[in-house]
Image 1 (cartoon, rainbow, N blue to C red):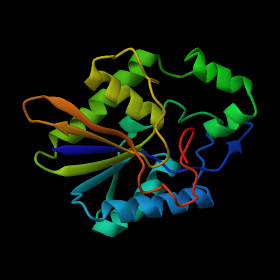
Image 2: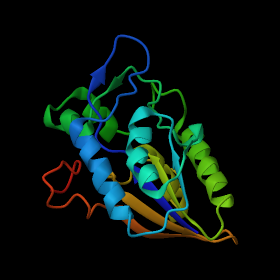
Image 3: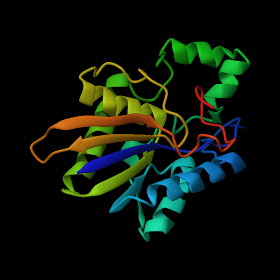
Length: 206
């Protein structure tokens, strides 16, 4: 089967005093999601999964509509910041030299609700569960940068890494998974559907 790990589109910035931020998509993010759906329309997609976080579900919606599918939400592919009271796009952190940018660069997990290993194991188990139910099919999984990093790191044999690359908004990362257990990475950070649109792509790329 072919697994399409897709990062969510650009959400709004949200910083709360308490409670989970769980931001919705920005206007640019909505346009990115529509471009994603149009791009995938030339392919076969047999099922679509999403993290329960709003930015992932809203990114999945145009794809689900295009293929006439119901979105299956699965908690195991939620991001490590799902309970955080703030969400600031990483591009804004970097541009303002925010102290949180330095923390991300340092891969500091000291205030996260899971250890790096717990997170990576949760993600791996959830993705493998999805794979097991879709032999011979193409499945889209709309999730998060950390989730994509964690799973691809396992496939590539670097299980201690959860931030070895930066997935752009609505980027597609393809993995071929065989019923015998082999996993092969086909593409990483596929964002042709955003090139030349004027929409933000992410930390790198125009």
